[in-house]
Length: 114
Image (cartoon, rainbow, N blue to C red; front, side, top):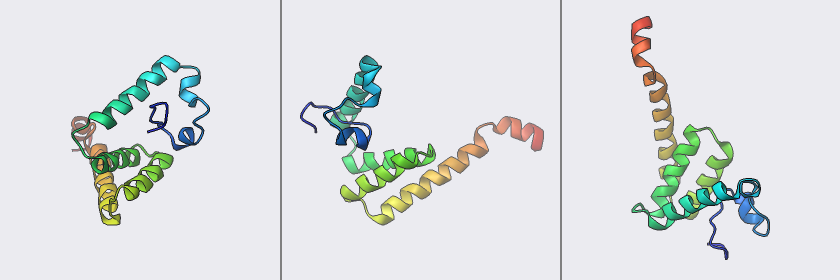
């Protein structure tokens, strides 16, 4: 954890510890609350750190954040996740993403197309 006790959301912010993260500059109160929320989850979770990282990877993939997906893959590897575990996480995320597309308005789809 950085010397100021803040866990940075983005790797770029961590590299520039001497500067405030962009989301703290104009919205310090809300940005600080967000970082506190992240810190609390990281410190008090019942899930182990590798599992949390794989969950973050799945979400980043489904939300199509390339920057986040790449960062979470690298972090998962650092935490000891295997390439097979990471691949399976990405496949589960892809499956869930596809499934939600089919189900998000299923009543309407059924009414019009079924």
